[in-house]
Amino acid sequence: MTPKPKIQYIGQFYVYGSEAQALAAKEKKRKPKTKLPMAGLDRIEKIYIDPLALIGIAVSVVMLVAMVAGAVRIQTDWAEYEQMSQYVSQLKKTNAQLEHQYRSGYDLKQIEEKALALGMIPKEEAQTITATVTIPEPEPEPGFWEDVIWFFSGLFA
Image (cartoon, rainbow, N blue to C red; front, top):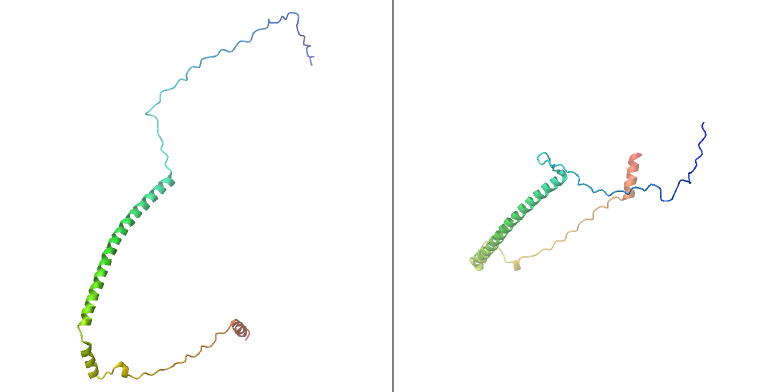
């Protein structure tokens, strides 16, 4: 191996200020980047569609249509209810008039005479009989222990 050379500094020729000056970095003006013209015809636009969002929109449209149809149906049913309510009140009024006409159309004295002629008697003259009935008590159902005894007696018999 070769020995490492001894480094010696030369100081006799050195004068302060004689060293080489560091070059100051020049500020360069940046040129704008060259831009290529945009190719409008070659550019392809991609539209991304989220299928879950599309399904949600479709479901909401269907629900909106169902809600509108329900509202229309409720409106027609309410009108029909009002019409039927008026018809029922008219029938009740007509029924009350016919019932009044029916009740005032017959004579109670004449009906009583016909009933007596057929052999019927007035309610006050009828005999009343009171009958009492005793209901027998049902047999008590077997309890838990009776069921257990019955089960084991049938098992080991």
